Length: 149
Image: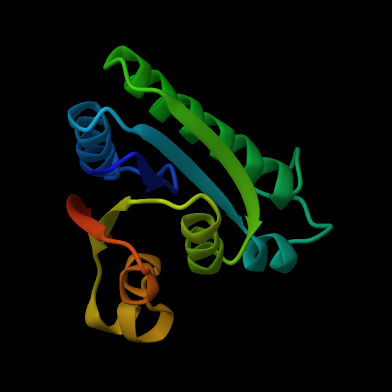
């Protein structure tokens, strides 16, 4: 039923349930798990040339390091379950890059976490998960996280 499952990750706390669901689905369907991290170009552009976080790196390098760590953690979890993975890190607008990846890699199912956010937060910034679920041509499974923020 599913040969290629996508798990976009932002590496934040609370995405663990989505990781578990994606790995379980890939194992159940003997599918390849694609794990995608998008370095948000809006954040990189906002901090371009400035020191970021601890003052030692720029925004792009810091976010890329976080992304690689997130990808490696999911790949290790999937390997423990015997699931083949493909990891990819790209720069761009998160929901646009996720939708592009779905189309280019012919993804059968996307598994995404969704944090509980206040109504004001959602009205102001929207939700990557919401945008992907509305625009994707393939099924999107949304896993609610237990972390609010």
